[in-house]
Amino acid sequence: MTTHASRFLAKPDEFATGPLVALTGSQRFLKRASLKTLAELVLGGEEAEPMVFAGKDTVLSDVLDELSMISMFGEQRLVIVEEADDFVKNYRKQLEKYLEKPAKKSVLVLDVKTWNKSTKLAKAVLKVGLTIVCDDLKGRELQSWMSQLTKEKFGKNIARESASLIEELVGNNLGLIEQELNKLSSYIGERDRIEQEDVRALVGGWKVETTWKMIDTLRDGRLGESLELLDNLLDAGEHPLKLLGGINFVYRKYVLATEWARQGTPLGESLRNAKVFPQAIDPSGRYLRRIGRPNAEKILTRLMAADGDLKGRSTIPDRMRMERLLVELSGLISADASV
Image 1 (spheres, rainbow, N blue to C red):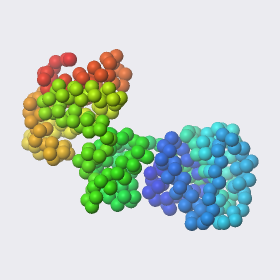
Image 2 (cartoon, one colour):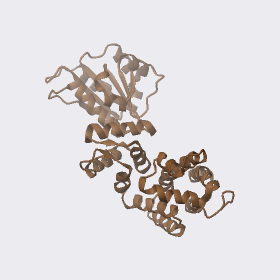
Image 3 (cartoon, one colour):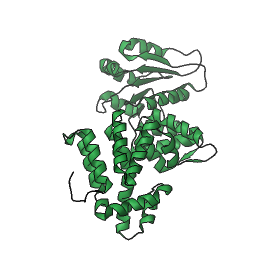
Image 4 (cartoon, rainbow, N blue to C red):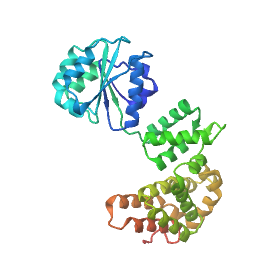
């Protein structure tokens, strides 16, 4: 059987380990959590601990001896080979043979970065063991994981938009996300749910707060101040793509609101439907009216163009490209003009 670590960690009792577990992928946070859960499944509450081998310095005979050893503390043994890519490469045929007649009361865990599904070993594990994929989570899967973690570990709920904002600010490093969720859960006190305002206030430090101020001043028609804040952020080492992520988070809501308003929904209602911060609805409405519908309808095109340019499509220096985007979004030029 094959499953993603997020599903395994959510309901581990639904998965049988079999004699061999392949722990694949590069997301260390998920691997550590999966190894802890595997130890609980295999060893239960017994005093025994897993036997851990360093893959680069390990020979197969030592691992097989450990697997066949009778435990003094419990009926099952858990043997883990860390960084096992070379180990698997060197002993693939022997491991295939081992699975034909594995130790009955032992579970072998191979911690690897890559796992070729087309090999006989991988196919054998698919039949008699368990493959846990520890790859990055993105989008809805990441937000679902955040929601589950927030509820089960910290006793709180998190709004979908709040989870989306955390992804924009932190990325998909699950260890860092857990730290931020921990801080946020303490920050909101007796309240039940983490809101966007909480994330905006707490996550990311002064650089993120400065990013919000840059976006707010741009919205409010203070382009010069917004450009100055952009310079401060870039001088402090903030990556342009990260800054663009913050701009995207706000301005894509304007894209949605503009489309709904074009279809006849009042602008204020459109902004609310697009999940704009309640306190930002009035200034956001003034912004969209100021730049006019032609400019508002071109926001998405400009965001996508900046993203492509920052990812290598253009030779324009990143600082100049970000400055250009702010000028485009300011509404000070017509929709069909170029900078």
